[in-house]
Structure formats: structure tokens, C-alpha cells
Image 1 (cartoon, rainbow, N blue to C red):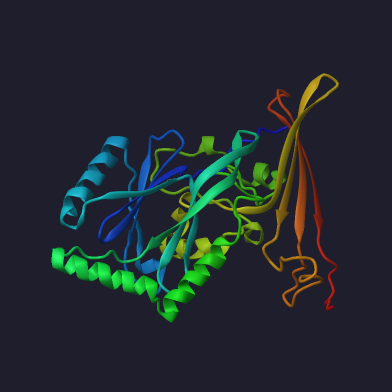
Image 2: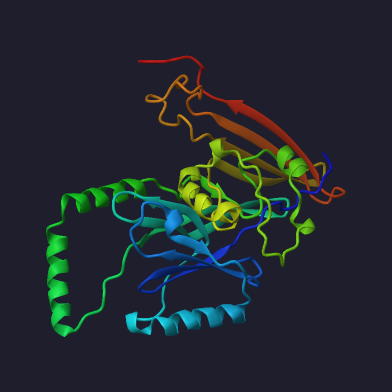
Length: 328
């Protein structure tokens, strides 16, 4: 096909998280750092994220954002004001075990390639940001009592606190820095043909509009953080797409070679389904829902830069375990 592969989806690319006694403020900006948005999350216990998360309806310029943060700082001076907690490059979603919600934040990234005009990134490091009620400030005598109580609690945790820490450790056991990839401007869950034909390029959208653009029709079977994003989508609707990136598990390899004096970029993408995945000795055959074990979609993309609007060719192959019920 001889089409231009333009970015088709836009999201916030840099995040700074602040906290006060009552709220967690997630500030996100676009690539040009011209537009800023604010997501407020209440720091209290709740059965659902719908009761905690709220996005400001409008976007802000850098000066307007400075005024908003100064107002938040002045209004919470008695509780310590506004404090910076973390800086990151993407939100994978929100997770809750027994105690409170956690924000899964990408704190370091690495660029692994580019498809058309869209950079593709891998994860280098992540951080769990707890969203729990803050400790109240007290006088000196109460401060000593609080310190003693906190030390005693850490030395003698309850069964619930022990279980919470165990679940957090199990969650962090998954190494997101290996074989997980994302992009702000390209839908990695879809094939190149679908991206180029089914999505409208960003150049046709109004970047100054506060109305969130239509999200690409991502294939949830290849989005490994689908469950982590679900509650935020329930809380914010379609605008949740600009706050969270879509995480794909598999492989991304890109090489540039020369063929008859012409530069050629060859990209290999492997998308692994999140359904019925596992090691080969534990997951084989098909599940009760019809998903085969370790279903992987392989796509080879060939790009000839400088050829008209950009020459692209794509070949897709699907593999998986034998589609029968298997025991051993």
C-alpha cells in the first residue's frame, strides 16, 4: 500500500503527581507542553474509583496551570500545602487489593523504534503511588504518640496489612521492563492495515478542542492493562484514553537495511493475547471460553522511506496452541 502512516491517537505524554491532605493531583501535558490537564483523586477509602476520580473540564496553559497549583497550595497550607510526589511518562491504570487504590506510573521509558511518525517505547521502570488518607498533623506530644503507634504497627502488622503487602509484592513481581511496549500516537493492538484505513489522522482533529477525540477501536485481547484501566474508563468515560497508555506484551524489533541502494526499514511486532496466557507446561490447548493458549499475532511491516507518501507493506501471521482440550 502507498499511504502515509500518520499518528491516529493522541494522549498526554508527561505527568507530574502532587498531593495535599485531601487530594492527589495528576497533571498531564502533551508532547509540545502547550496544553495541561488535571485529574483530581480523593485520598480516602471508597469501593469504586468512580467516587474518587474527577477530571477538570477544561485544559490549561502553563501560566494558568501555575495559578491553579498555587491556589491549591494556598488552600491547603494548614495541612502542609501542595507537595510533588512523582514524575512519569504514562499511567498504566489503577489497582486495588484490600486497603487502597494504587496508581501504576511509568517513571522511565526507552525508545525502541518508530512506525511512520509515531514513536514506540518500552518501559524501563514503574512505581506504585498509593492513594490513601494522609496522616493528620498534631502537636508535639501527639506527634510522639503517633510515632510510637506507627512504629508499633510496622513491627506488629495486622493480618490485613500483611496480606496487602503480599499482594503488592506479587503485583510488582511482574517485570514490566521486559517485553512490554506502548505508544502515545499509534495503536499497537491493531494491524497496520486497520490503523491506516480505519482511523482518522491527528492532522484532521482540532488540537485546541477540550472534547476528547474518539478513541481508536483497540483490541482488548492484546491490551494487557485492560483491567487496570477499566475503572478509570467507568469514571471518566472516553476521556480516560488520554490519561492511560495501552500496554502490549510481546516483542518489537526494528532494523534498517539496504536493498538495491534503497533504505528499507523492517519491523517485527509480536502481540501476545492476555487470554489464557502462561508457560507452555501449564497452559496448552483451548480454554472453556474458546481462547487458545499463548495466542500470538505476528506482523512484519516493511517501510521504504522517501517513496512517494511512504511505501508500507504488512504481513500478518497468527499462531497459538492446538485448539482442543488438553491435560497432562
